Image (cartoon, rainbow, N blue to C red; front, side, top):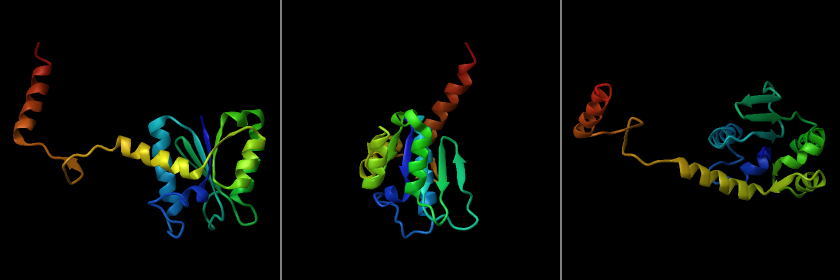
Amino acid sequence: MPYIIDGHNLIGQMPDISLAELDDEQRLIELLQDFCNRHGRIAEVYFDNAPPGVPRARTYGRLTAYFTRSGKSADQAIFERLHRLGKEARNWTVVSSDRQVQAMAKAVRAKILSSNEFARQLKRSNMATETTYPEKGGLAELDSDEVERWLGLFKNKGKK
């Protein structure tokens, strides 16, 4: 099921991202992009007050980020998107804890997920795919016996 995400509302629920950070939007985009890629999901995230020079929309694989200009809020952009979807809106999940956004989603029969719950899902998803290895320079260290065993497996693979 695809998602429509109220970006700044979600950032407010993320323990590792702050709205006060200069790169808060980019950090959320990276998390969402990773989530979409790992789970085969499609998502759209909407942000208020795009700085000058930032494109109104950018695509990151399965994720599209929309940046509204002054005079238009992310809430308005979400509302417009839901109405363009028409009956298809019921196949989407709107992520926001804003009651007005939730009411808009409910009016078009879209599913609703609070930002707090989605933030927990992102965290669980991220933790589930992380594997802990002793690292050096970003790569797992292998002792010489393990290297020899792997080399032996690969050398003998073609000899049958």
